[in-house]
Length: 378
Ligand code: IMP
Ligand code: ZN
Image (cartoon, rainbow, N blue to C red; front, side, top):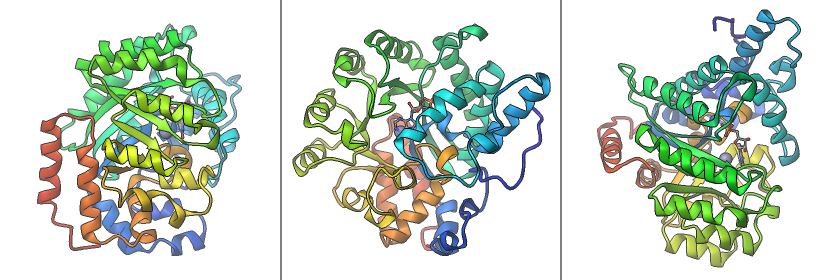
């Protein structure tokens, strides 16, 4: 796809992440020293949704290509549908972005491949060295795309990207069950994860609108995933509506390896999570911009979890929507929690400990950090 990309659009593919900020006040709260350090820092990204990581410029490219080929194509330009300077959402306005817009745009093999490569490149350019990308298997009947073909297509892009000369980022795939799925659909996701395990699927996830669904129906499916040796990560206590004691107890009974967000948890549950050494994936900008936490960056529960002893992976969640690449998430954490170089070192090493990748990959990452010569430059 050779459409022109407007240069002014907030995009994770950039060497100056602070540009993502649109107001002077935001730029000033983000001094260049920590952002330059955070950009150079080799990083591990463990919580990124493929469709939420596609930036507006790439969505616009796809839209333009479709509009040019078919002038009657009636989807709104992404630059209007998801305005480039809009990063503030709430759970009611955020989730429809996917079902009502992005899925309608990325609706054939060409656009899925184009957007997947663009997402991979944007993480690589942000100096991510290990990426665990997640996606919900999606069938597109009018294009004869089955869920299996969708997964195969994304995996083929990852495979090709991993093999590119000079690319030191290694990517694995996690398949998501959506909370709106039926048990049959959830079982299908687990079966696809097992089918494609040897091709780069590392584990499974539970995601989707926290206001929807009843997680209890998935217990059997996740039990099968666990018994088959698949790694499990779950969106956990993301909103008050999905944080009842019964729901959180059900999710913990699936013996997850990692938990995402972990916002509305009481002291007892925190102790159990720490006791079971479950890794956590924390997303500062997403939680602030989608109003999932009260207050701002300095109030984020990263402050608590970073001292808890469990592995913490700072992550972006949906960089295409919230416009904060992983380097910016590190920079925000450094500033709002006054992290020292030693703190960042422990943070990075904790994230390596909780990857779903194998021991060989952990060793590769530890070596990258050992050999990195930027530790003095915060
Ligand atoms: P996909 O799975 O690659 O299609 O990425 C988009 C999907 O990720 C959405 O439909 C949601 O189900 C899920 N998702 C993205 N962000 C969040 C989040 O913050 N919480 C829960 N689910 C999310
Ligand atoms: Zn998420």
